Structure formats: C-alpha cells, structure tokens
Image 1 (cartoon, rainbow, N blue to C red):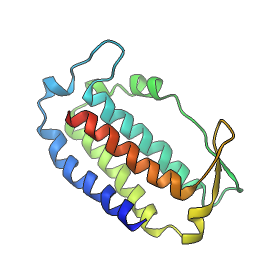
Image 2 (image 1 turned 180 degrees about the horizontal axis):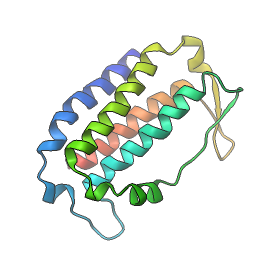
Image 3 (image 1 turned 90 degrees about the vertical axis):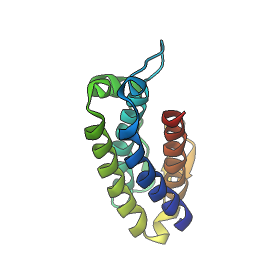
Length: 146
C-alpha cells in the first residue's frame, strides 16, 4: 500500500498547484453530453466524499460491507461545479483527499482484507477499493490535463 499512498500524495501535490493555473475558459469548455474539466474535478470531489464514507464505515460496520453507488451525473449537476471558483473547488478536492490519505496511512493491515459486496454482488476487498480509488483519480486527472 505504500506505493499507492506515495502515488496518491504525488497526484494531489502536483495537481493542487497545477489546476488553478489552467485558464478558466479551458476549464469550462463543454461538449454535448460530456463534462467540462471543472465538472470532472467536481466529480472527483463527489468521489472523495463517497469514498471517504466508505473507507471510514468499513472499519466499524458489520462485515461484509455493502458498497452503495451514487448518481454521478446528478451530483455534478446539483453541486454546480461548473460555476464554482477553481481555487475553491481545488481546495475542497484537496482537503477531502488529504483526509482519505490519513485513513490510508492508518489502515490496519487486517482491514485490507475486509470484504465488500458490490451492487452486482461481486466481491472485492478494501485493498482493491483503495487502489482503484487512486487509479480512478489518476484517470480523471489525466482527462483534466489533456
């Protein structure tokens, strides 16, 4: 998990500085049926909120933990990330993810094997969920940077 945490920290540190330097016109460009770069960052905020709850709850709720999905499109629209100031949006994203890093750094090794039942009834473990979270983060960061 140490490599995952290091990658996570690097993604946050590099992009918390970089994102506010992107011209607002570039951040707000929308194509039909697609999110703007600002909305992608908003989606990462929503992902952080929901995963922070998951990474926390799995430690004290009955096992196996049941993964609850969320409506990504509705949340991006309802939270109006498109109209948010980029500095405020980056700060929100950064703060949430710093808390997730704290959880990652303090997770009990035994907890990494906790089972998670997905909505389709497939089973993953906490280690997979944590690793996948960082990969998801990197994927969307690359979309913002492209």
